Length: 367
Image (cartoon, rainbow, N blue to C red):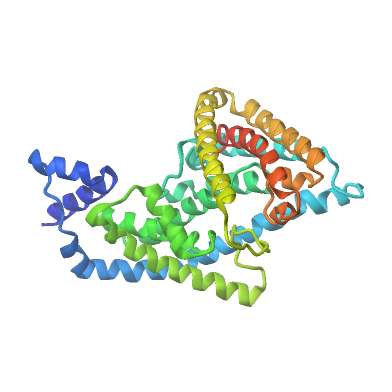
């Protein structure tokens, strides 16, 4: 009986990753019969998964909160405090060049020396498979080096990996004989909790993870229910910690956006054009990053800092051309409000090629 249940659990995981179409094909070919999601949702084991998902959401949200706080403090030290400590009156225009290169060197060392290679490759897109606990130190170290020194990458992927790894670790510490299905669901719930307020709302983070996981069909509710529960718990923890510490909720939303009236035809045209341009640029960034990835992987200690130098040079050029500061040029959070000026449209369009090349360089060597 135990072997039968174990086989069914492995089958659930495999079919959830392969998608509904593959499930139907397996059934038609006489493979493992699909699991009834309604029966699974009504089982006592699933209730236990819901309770565990809510419980693990609390410590994971706490860890994610202070991880984001640590990133903010390190960024402020690198780009604001450190120049003054070294005798400069203000941050020099060339400051991002050595800082991003140094961060690249740290990331290369982490990827080469620690288990887990620092997480997944950013150029391959978001990965929502639960992280193995042994890879967590490397992921945290690589993420801190990447984000703190100004590489053009966001915190969402490290948080997803961190939350998933902590969720799997919590399951492993609870029981060793947990089915793979439960371990996977709790890992995904941990990712939900970690990014619960990063995009402004738990629902927004849930949509991001659903798209990244490519989970659909009748089994969507199996993963979504504990995920949303963990996200709600995580959002409450973030709000409570903000009230307790005053550090904020660390959302990526742009603050103090001017009020907007009724859109006209010209603004719709601009929006459509920007959407098309964004899609084309995104595809170009990903393809070029995938082309650079094997080149960098062969001599990572050399090429990762070199990519950091390129990112820093582009930040300096942008800062000198727009008078917005080099911290904006490397995308340090908290500097987005500097775009909110009468020249904002020109500044944003001027930043498009700079941001595209920086993203290409950031995703090819970093994890």
